Length: 338
Ligand SMILES: Cc1cc2nc3c(=O)[nH]c(=O)nc-3n(C[C@H](O)[C@H](O)[C@H](O)COP(=O)(O)OP(=O)(O)OC[C@H]3O[C@@H](n4cnc5c(N)ncnc54)[C@H](O)[C@@H]3O)c2cc1C
Image (cartoon, rainbow, N blue to C red):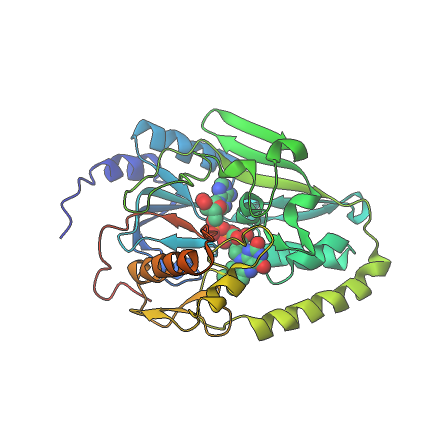
């Protein structure tokens, strides 16, 4: 039984009485892994002003806030996430086509597959590389999601974000996109420290929530659309053949320079390695899958073993791509798992 002081929630529930707020919201339902304990409070924001109010409220009550996108690159601890979890919807999930299809203005709560479909229909060549990646646009920008055929950062012109003090905008260069990274992965954006030790609850008050992205493509041509669609469908079919159907958060580890994490894990003989209800997928070794009822602890135990074995086998230190957030010290509550 928890002995945590949750009295801070009453003040915020009163302050946000007109907002969409859920108490003790199970996060396993909102992550592709199907893993994760509850959020103390889950707020859904439909506009910039609500985001600003949430940031001001958490500052006032000295609570951490975590921004949850599509939950497709996350491992949430079995003890859940303390403080406030913020999600985006409504006006923050809209997509507008401008400049005859050469410019897209997209809310960060829009799904990445919807953006991908729209960009392909408009003949944006880079969107071929985005095909098949789940999640939302905000998470895609943070992670610079995509593949070797194109990453979202290639076409991002401007990112808008809300801070407690107002609106902030970043041009393409300021975003510093790289392989599965961007400037936004620094401390404080989204609410979790990227270098957090998973044994400690290490959230902090978020400084920035990404709300809108402006993408541009000079080479777009609807005449290309049919050809692009065929290439994208081909890549998607290959992806379906080479990736597991069970729940996961995609590639668990980043590819080390000049190599593939999956190849290294397979070469270390780890395909099918299982702990609890988590398993190194026999289909793709860089996917750890939830066999049904897996806990975050099971996934961490598998990942620890993979890292140690690959290190011993090939001397390579694998770095997590999936972001870990929340309380990993509390075991999963009985019946809490999906
Ligand atoms: C089956 C599968 C296949 C995948 N294939 C690929 C692939 O091919 N290429 C690839 O790059 N990735 C892939 N992924 C990983 C994942 O889909 C991407 O990283 C995706 O872009 C994450 O977006 P999300 O909205 O789910 O982010 P989340 O997982 O919800 O969050 C990721 C991080 O972004 C932060 N964040 C999210 N939204 C905001 C916001 N609005 N403001 C501030 N911070 C925010 C969160 O706080 C968190 O730190 C795959 C995942 C799965 C499950």
